[in-house]
Image 1: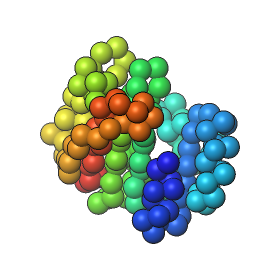
Image 2: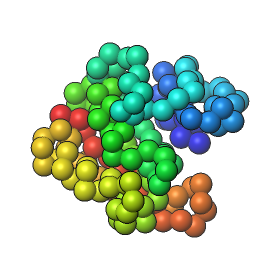
Image 3: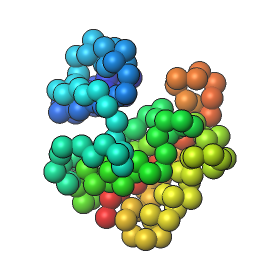
Image 4: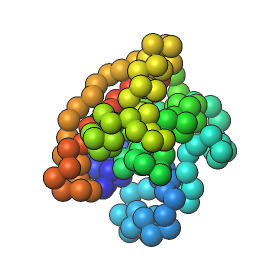
Length: 143
């Protein structure tokens, strides 16, 4: 869904990463991605791209229990050029709750305090995957 929306907004050099071959198949059918890869972005899987390669890293539906957590953010930040953006869309309850292996809210706050990121906005949205689930879009600029 997001790749198609970015394409409609005029972005043409889109890369997609997913842990699910089924999701990648759906992404291929959209015909908007220039590159698609099976895998994840994280501490155990540093991607073979130079630091600052991307203008934006956009994650949706990944920061939930037993998926990605705050330990994955440094690699995402590494991939974004200075002045570029990190955008995360997730379930609002998971962002607010901070339970188990997911401490996204406090980790992002610390990264802002440490000068790694600058908070641009937190915007409430309806989470599209779970039709009536409150979601949140988190937008940060990489310093």
